[in-house]
Length: 195
Image (cartoon, rainbow, N blue to C red; front, side):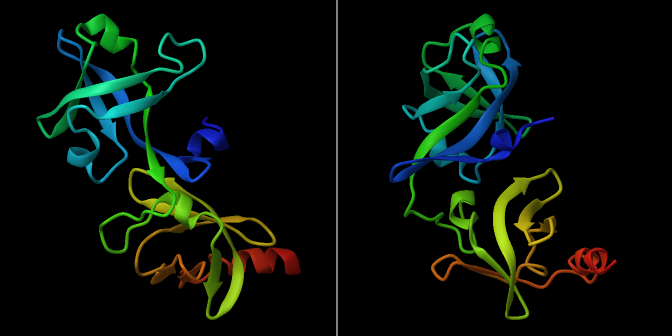
């Protein structure tokens, strides 16, 4: 099971953040290409030729503390495959499997898409329901089906699907997330305390 630090999608460093934009899955072919799991909605902007990516790998990895440079991003059967400068064979590609790819992102820059935020912009915001503050957003969990908000209340941590029907308003500048959760999600905590 992953630790909380592995589930955090950002690392704050001074006035910028290191965002996870992908993870290497497996070698593709014999010439150093690697299949990529995307953590970004903008792969064609993040993986342009010449882009330098930092690697998050264990300390014992030969890649620890190093960067890689993108040569080309290609798509095979709708799957992204990355070619890197100086990675020219399958053995080198296999040594990068499971590496997380990081890019530096200024803290004050938001995604260009409407109703889109970086995780670090949401962490710590007040969570409000019917005008009453009920907790604080700890983090966003990215699950296969949908993203989940991890909300810290006085009693526990509650997971809420990050969908418009349950999260109608996010106001980063005001520091507030308004929610309309399904019945019973937060009441169960209150009932448990009453008993």
